[in-house]
Image (cartoon, rainbow, N blue to C red):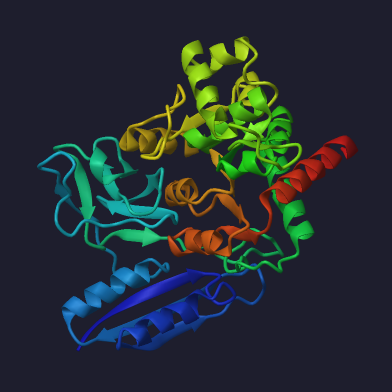
Length: 409
């Protein structure tokens, strides 16, 4: 049998970290012995456990310890992180360490470095001269970069249960259509208000159903109220927002009556064509083509727009990034400093954004389809609060709550 000892520190009991560690060991067919246990004597005092894990082989033990590190387990005897150089641009060394979106640290020359810009499913590049470590996607590694390999010298901080009740909290966000919406919306509004108060960024990831459901007015209101600093979307949101401004329709359906209009299926193409003829969204706004919708408000308040295209796009609209890797890079730059992320009526953009967000970002995903909300959690954004509800009702209530909070302040 191969064995090693590891430690767990923090709120490992009430955050369910300790039982999860034991479960991973047992599921792997290994065993464990608890050599030391100190339980915090109050809700704020941390706990400590020193545990020996035994596996059938060194290879299985190494694999198991890799899983346990993701839960915050740290070997009693820690080593420096191992690195290997990149020898071909965009190609990683064997045995590269793949990150989670949890706070991560690597030990370099005896010094623990915090990994900057952490996100899931990327690698860690070490700059020894600058004593820095950063997260880096596969396509961006360059020849000579030192990439962390294996699990030695890597520490991950698991999310812990908050000391008080909180909607945004580890293991407190099951997906349910029966969740108390009013309470959740109030807590989302409070998180947004707190972020705005101290200058944190609020990100909205928006799908075209925002326009189809007539929720564009609520988004414009939130923008003008200073509650949105960054928007991620695709070509369709812009096309239908401009269509609504120019024709009062979305996908050819009259937004006032809900009835299709004659030849309305062409309206979004007319909208795209008009903006392309103007040359840019800014020029289209100057010509009065954007009305008072989402794009008009975003340009007025200098909201950061990252519009990532897809293979389905018509046009596309000026400003839409058609290179997928280029769009990823722009999104990575834009998520820095984000404290609250709201993903509304979007699946692909929401999943992509969730993969780039640190676990500490307060995240809510809203969709009428429970499968969309569940899929985001399944793809690794486990910290997200999931709300299964009509997006127009949610956004209208959110805007009203923030307006009431502001007027009552």
